[in-house]
Length: 228
Image (cartoon, rainbow, N blue to C red):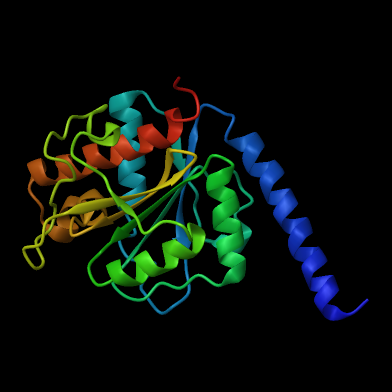
């Protein structure tokens, strides 16, 4: 048996283990959040306090059961029951063929992918997400989309948290069989608003907007498989 066949067998075996594990974990009532460690040179480690603060906000205000995985997660080791996968950064993001396989399987089995452009990542992210969803270019979510309706209302759509170049904030959605399974947020900088208040010196209202929008994303990722 040559090395190529052995490598393919190992990849398929690991992917099957991943599918079984994540399927079991996503059936629970809680949420496991994680930061995606990606290749390409971008600072995937940006906003280190963001997810913990978002999870705490959700748990305290919406009676949630979110927890954050304590270590960053490359796509090819998504075997720990992660349900909400978050990526951010300022530069280039790159998914190789193995990453694409695992990320596609992740969303197919109920996981939710959120990529938040921390400024300078947007165009790279759009190209890489299209590898996961090759028939989609990202659909601009209108202000009346369900993720802007609750639990917190955003009648104007995605909020602007940090101003960079006066462009409007956009949420681009990616779907499987009509269901929203991934969102790319650009020109908003939600993750900066989730960070500890002293990091960016955002006022309370700005942080609250960011956390509430993040809570809407978390809520959708948790309930979309159970709502009629």
